Amino acid sequence: MVDVSEKEISTRSATAATKLIMQPQTLTLIKQGGMKKGDVLAVAQVSGIMAAKKTWEWIPMCHPIPLTGIDIAFHDNGTNELYIEATVKTTGVTGVEMEALTAVSAAALTVYDMCKAVEKEMIIGPTMLITKTGGKNGDFHRKDT
Image (cartoon, rainbow, N blue to C red; front, top):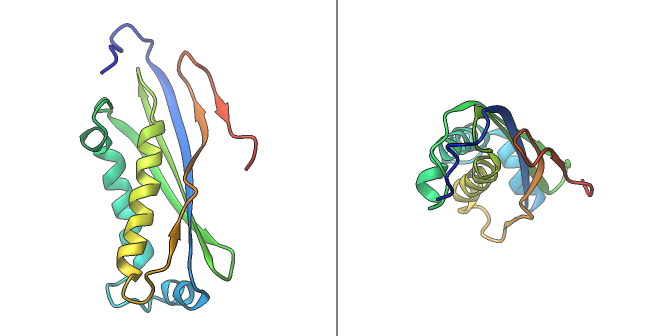
């Protein structure tokens, strides 16, 4: 693990996104609350939050970070794509990019799990970092989104 003990404390945030491509009827069932396992988006939101908080347990070289905020949002294209975006914040000595990426990944996997009885051909991805703020390396803003 990288030694971050000499780094400056700063406010940091990261936003990551992913999407699921699915059949239109699968997206309709999600939006109408018609999946047998329950409210897909509510469960996926909790999953993403839990995953962000436990990223250091999933990714071997990540530091345990006290997170100050996690926001997970869902939207769709009205036909066959569900978009997931997570913004994670902290005040500390290391960034939260991995936490944001883990949050959207876990949320997407949860959607897949809750819908796989209806459709197994869903596609997850691409998954990407959208923005990152704070820290000695400065800000990052993806240009192609």
